Image (cartoon, rainbow, N blue to C red; front, side, top):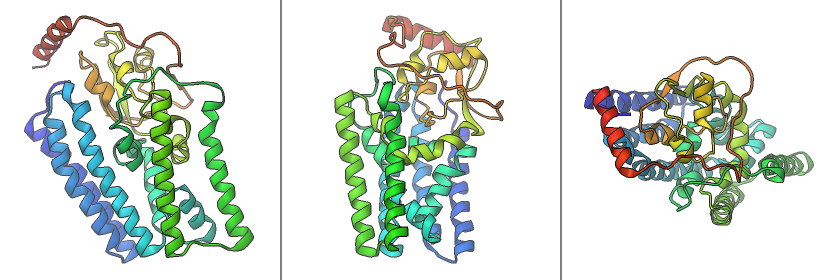
Length: 333
């Protein structure tokens, strides 16, 4: 994957900015509130220079260059969510989504989950998890960027259990006591949840030596995005003719997806675990991976690297990597 031209970078940043301003304007027209226009306008405005910077980097540096961009977006999202708590008593978290769903209140939590988790992933997959989640933004800064693979057994069910516990708790409070958080309670729910996720996420990352362990094993919000993400129009596509099968992409993937297997099957990366961070695209020395829009055949094909399996990459000398990368760049020019 070569460095993009300035024209391409400007088009990509402009499209992202226009889309976010368009969402904000539409939400403003529907809700008659300036809040969504201000939020999505702010997000679109800060994303434009961030995308220009990120896409101007050579592919080998984009993985590291992505982190400050994601941190800036995550801080903005967290600040916006906190503002909605104070202004609307809306808890932008799983519990807040259930409170609004049960009570019939169409607040910020319902809008957030509809866009980021339930319907948005039908088009853009789990891009929110990879680029806008304030929990993921912090976890990406930790030092354990390459995991040993997915753990089996009870680990794979913990996030579903977490979601069920949240659902039952909110259902008991609403249907049993007609409890709906006021401003103070909503602030406690939100800040308490943020701190709990940070503590759990950082602790789990150090225990399992895996930055995104929380996302894989404990995050209940990600569970809601899985069904829609499977049918996403935007996915990573691999070219089997150019794939070297060495597994650099698999080693770079924070979600342990066996990307080379999808490529050799002749299909796009169909895993609903993909967060579209594009680490695989930027790690590929042969430029065989890219983003693509399309419709995939029905069925579930979840190919994940298991914990304790074979190493995901064949190590080749750095000097040889440089030679191969230069040869690839000459072919692309």
